[in-house]
Image (cartoon, rainbow, N blue to C red; front, side):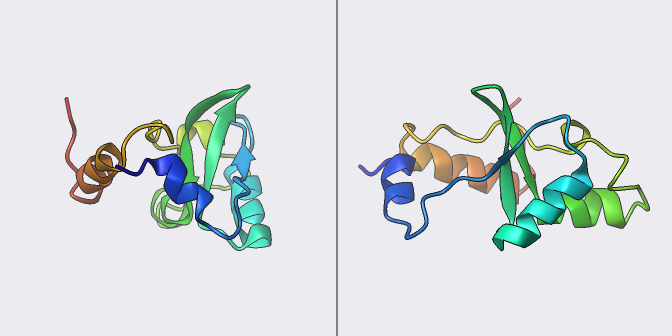
Length: 105
C-alpha cells in the first residue's frame, strides 16, 4: 500500500512551504499567492502544528470582516494533518471526515 510520502514523492515540485503560528494571516496569504499554492503547513520549530488554506482565509477572515494583518495564523490554522508515513487510507479517511465536517471525538 502506498503511503502519503510516496504520493508526495511523485509530485513534480516537492517543496513544502511553511509558516509559523505567530505570523499574520496576511503574510500567509501573501506567501501562498507568491508561490501559487493553496495551503501552508504551520510549523512550530521542527513540529507540524497544523495548516492554513486559502479557504480558511476566505471563510474565517474575509467573510467575517476580520483583519488579516492583525490576525495570527495560530488563530485560524486547522488541526495537524496526517504524517506522510501514515498509509494513504488514513489520509483518505481524515480527508473524508474533514470534507463532511465530522469529528472523530
